Length: 350
View 1 (tube, rainbow, N blue to C red):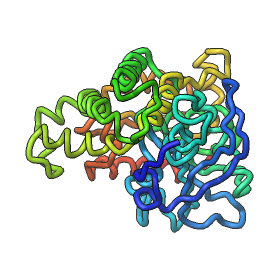
View 2 (cartoon, rainbow, N blue to C red; view 1 turned 90 degrees about the vertical axis):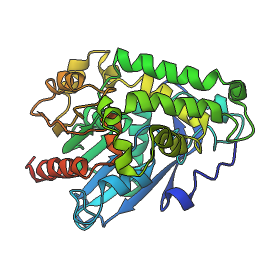
View 3 (tube, rainbow, N blue to C red; view 1 turned 135 degrees about the vertical axis):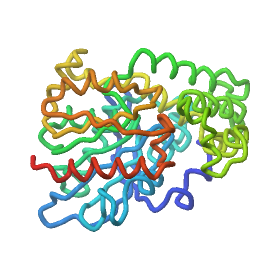
View 4 (cartoon, rainbow, N blue to C red; view 1 turned 180 degrees about the vertical axis):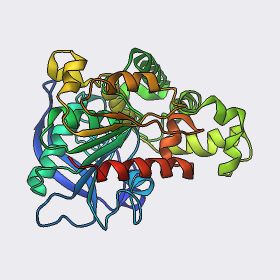
């Protein structure tokens, strides 16, 4: 168990903790004294039918989802909806390798799957708030994979779903990339089998990890057009160090590894014996599948292939010059498109 000031109310607050007790995992492990960190905005109405669930992506927390995807005048507006943003297990604020007491801390933290996140979130929504129906579930990347899992696992509870820049099952292409990212972390001598005692000891691996995201997370156009200049960086190196390395360096490597392994095994068809089409047919929610046109992680064709199996769904392609990391809301046009689609989705009778 390590103290890491990055995972704090000062940086990511406000958030609260929901205690699940000893939480049993799908693959057989248990997180003892498991907690979910979450934030809420707006007011749950008397009918409890105005709730929106926002999930988090790899490395992300409730704070960035609040800042980029919610707010007054936005599609997900706390004046109209009760917004619940839940930090995924292993993400650093909820139960994770670095904040779990021995003997299950660090590299002994159990492996997770996306279904564990969804089951934990279900307990939060139903037991803490008495919510039985969700107006919308929305998330990007690994959060999109949680969105698919929600819609397929609890089809009677989810009225609308908006997976952004993500697939219901991790593709072989992405699996190779994820395995390479894992190797980057565990091959660092300071990794020490996951038993480092300084939370920032593995900084060299995290710097290399950031460069993976520079290559695959951003589009070729971002580099060719020098778009880093538009967000205040003087050179490409200034951007990589000042933005990407700055983003990843405070994070815990065991927590990142836990999320990567979850991402590697993300597959909504686990509940249907490996048949993806059958799993997606379970979805009853009105679904807008929203890939990013320049994404080099979750390609439009992969997202469209899955979307065709979801009854009544629509493919809504989001234009961005930034690739997958357009999710960060760097471009005003990106957030405008997201809001336009989410407003239409929320206005669609179901």
